[in-house]
Length: 439
Image (cartoon, rainbow, N blue to C red; front, side):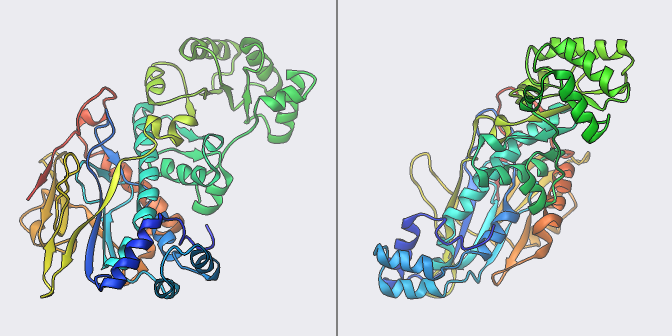
């Protein structure tokens, strides 16, 4: 993304700063935290995604002349506050869970330390990024786990907005998807892209045979031919006849998939195309992928379900002030006590307790020293620290940015999955697979 991200926010962020500048509290050093009070119904873990994008957006969070003029014309804040916004640059520190990390209720996913005014400005940006990307990643991880090692491709661009499509492709890739159909996601984040033809290409031609021949002429026999525009059995027969026994794959986008896939596999084998793969699409989600686990499917393409979080388009994260300095310079814990919206105040660090088999047993949140505290982890190797420093003095660690950061997040997610108890991968309803314990 290019340009300013400064107005990607809610009005009350600016009006809070306006009032705080007026009463002198704007520059109190404060600690904000993003976390989820609960997981979406039926989910046993979540996957963090969006941090790399967020760090870049924070760097772009600048008020240029156009933004300042709009705020001035609409009298959103006082002129003195507009002058303050003109010089806004986030200069604080940020810690959090790495992208690709599993999280649970109460996990301190992101901690921002800065002045109140600097940090509160980022609330909407933090939540809009982490809520969407983590929702997609959490759904995608479930799909990957039930795909049992078979490749899964993200192809949901037409089911969401143009900007969300790019974010979704990145989040799904971090969660283990193998490729995307979205070219901008490929250019921006280095995600492998793939795709051949839709039904329109077949309908363009005078016959299915002409369409298949044109595609083979263009891309070679290893291409994937879409065989369900008309009759599937006839389409498979034509595909093999035109591309030969070296046909790369056939794609099926309709029908009773378990039955159709079995019939197509049998037909391909009878024709001698034993190496030709079968890929299926057609409104897949984790439940349908699981239902196809015994079918001879070689790969999956998922659209609507993944870009909408498979029923949960937002991860339910919140952003709360949890500590601030008092007049003596000491940290004071603060927290909401509203019914059903409780939060735990204080500076926090976090670790995951692993048993002797390196299986996660508890999410441990230490209230006290804050994200840079290390004393809690010196006792033994059963605690894996979870929080890393993303930004220091307003400068992001480049290890978490761009293609390299995305690839690192993908690799980390694969490692983390090895720690989770087996019950984490059940699709039936249930609570978080490990408890969150405060110390």
